[in-house]
Amino acid sequence: MRAILFDIDGVLLQNGSAIDGAAATLSWVQRHAIPFRLLTNTTSRNRASICAGLNRHGLQVSETDIITPPVAARQWLQQQQCDRVELLVPEGIRGEFAVSDASPAVDAIVVGDLGAGFTFERLNSAFRLLMDNPQAALVALGMTRYFVGSDGLQLDVGPFIKALEYASGRQAQVMGKPAAAFFRLALDELGVSADQTLMIGDDWLGDVLGAQACGIHGCLVRTGKYRKGDELADADGLAAQYVLDSVADLPALWARLQ
Image 1 (cartoon, rainbow, N blue to C red):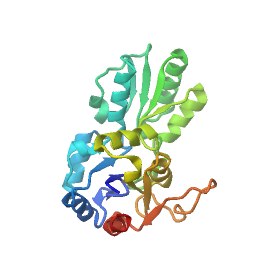
Image 2: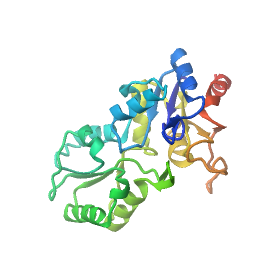
Image 3: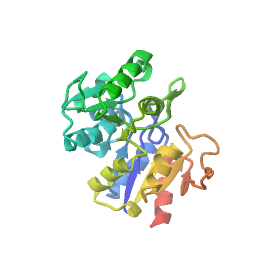
Image 4: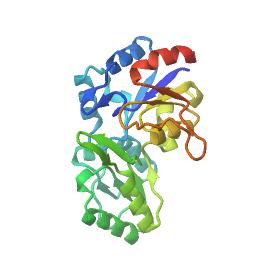
């Protein structure tokens, strides 16, 4: 095993604070010169803001250590030569895209986590754009089902993308976890193969099974959005290869895997 991929929320941070032992584990990774990336489906903040938040809690990383769906989406839009783009994303990440809104004629519609901004009017506007522009791509900044907010579980972008897919008959191009292309972007940056890499996440489906489907080793932590029973096999017999109480236990697992 050579490299590690970390989810952020629920693995390193929870409710705005560092999880016990997370800073020490990240420091251990850096001292041992283990290549790593932080993979997050967060689309409400840009990388600079995410990085600053981690640093405030003793998790010393740089912006280049973080891979977000907007970064992957920007690359994809450039490759596909999509110049006319409608952005349904939080204001804080609009600067990650070198495009401006182009309604009503669009090449792509990019949808991120708008939280309470997912009103009927906004969803219906996106639906109409898809129907009026049959060639336009629906680009999803992740397919996470829910996350843990300060007041409990909250819907993430995935359910709203599913609504647009169902209504329009269009399949979304997914830029965050569990899309294989998102994991491959991290592997390419680190210069490692899937079978040399371990993914640590609190989401058994998006983080762990998504990574394992790409050949990456998956480890579920019992923090964040973890719920009792998540470590059990699903209807297809798939389950996390490794389970830890928290990321603080990673060094011991890493030693066993060498």
